[in-house]
Image (cartoon, rainbow over all chains, first blue to last red; front, side, top):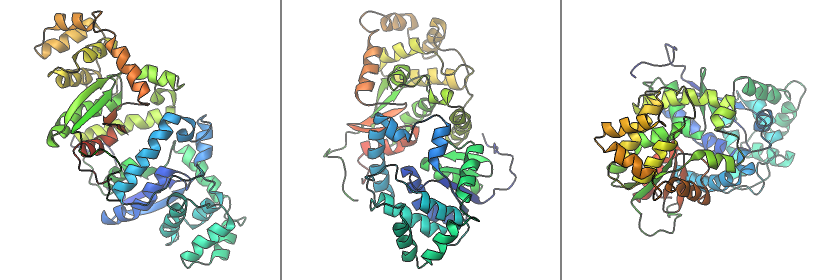
Length: 211
Length: 211
């Protein structure tokens, strides 16, 4: 039990976060990953993708928490408790899962930008703390403006022929890599599913895992 | 965020563990709960139930890890990593989910006995560490004998008219309480799903939760 199961000789010190703005458990990880990764000296690679097509491909007719009422009832309570534990604001969105195509396109465009983390937290906060619509051009521009970013320019770039296909490519890659839910973390080829695995994934990236 | 969401004035200091011997994540909690609860001065109420009928009632054709190949592949890796982290022995069973009706009946009969925890760990170890069949009278007798218990007497009692319906009653109660997977913990009416919530559930039982 003392050997690393992974054959990677040196830890990558990078964690990929695969997420969708509509996903409530993604909300938890988007809000937490910046600090948790920084404390472990691990960098974050943001990987937005659309969860809907992934569920469809798995033969599910929609979000499991909507389709299965027992699980849905539980998840609402689980989110209340987890947000209280993490000190995060929380309100179950009046529209769930909320349409998020435009902010997701901006995220796919901006994934490598230094403001990507702040952008993701801003949109997640609107969806899951303020219960606000996030898919309109107005909402997206407002969020970008709050970050002192050139909103018009960014939205135009995200929707341009050059960049608008990026989100679709991300989603196809998610499917290829075997992703079946969000959030999902990758550290090299090691996959970790769910907000509950954030700490384990970061420990893996930092080489602190004895497994 | 500093108030308890629960209206319970004093913590119950008791945690219920709802589990099935065939469930791999139940294995983790069955092996861990004794020490974790003792350290928090919380007592454990063992609640065996049959997960199969619960899945059927939810319209699932079998264990999600068997039905969905993406999730199944992930779960195998997840179990390896978690067992390494917890220091637990692990082998993916050659039969999954393994038939466990007889040892489950013994568990339903013995739920209040002082040897219940040891019994559950013994059967779980046979299934998930030794990859052994657990549903035969021979396997069950052997496990009871290893615990220095009167095997013949216990099996006869578990199968008697007086006790054999207990497992069915447990499963019906699990469904009534909204259980949709295993392990599930209850602390009073607070439900926690999954081995990942063991620590949160114990903290809740001990009154250490600020939520």
